Image (cartoon, rainbow, N blue to C red; front, side, top):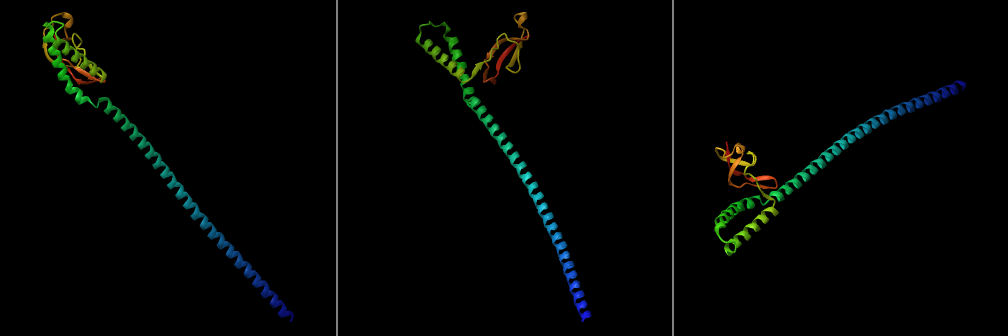
Length: 191
């Protein structure tokens, strides 16, 4: 009986050892699985962080692009408003030229002539209208020739020595619209 008791005790101890070994192995496997899960979770977190950084970068670039677009369109609108009526104003310039020719023709008339007074009144109103819309006449007579403002039609011998290389006569007046040339002065240059 003693042997049987010892055998039973040995079997119980062996069973306890085996169960402890199984539980140790189970714990090792659980730790491995936990580690794998942690690694997967960390990889997923890193991937999500990288995607978030990419999205933030794209968002910032899109915002900057939109801001640039807004500024550009605002600038274009301002330029359009500034020179929007350029074609209309350019088409009015020949009318002003005709008024100036009429004024030269009416110089011989008396000052109290109603026709002459009417033409002068309309001409001054046109001049005021042009000033209000940002149109200025280019001063050319006896000025140095400037290719950015003048268009040389011909050259003639200068009547005075100081007029060499300068504008001797203006054939057609030039105009600026908000500092932009809309019609060059057609001039004769002294040489």
